[in-house]
Image (tube, rainbow, N blue to C red; front, side, top):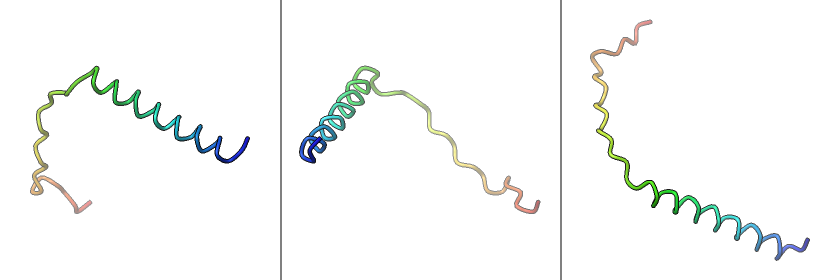
Length: 48
């Protein structure tokens, strides 16, 4: 297999993977999640 053919096959595979990921994202849509509260540093015990 020649180098240009390998490069073309790799680029094609990357484009296909991107298209599948983009299509899956469009199909699922945005996911509504509530933000996670930050940890309170006063509750962390570092003296183990």
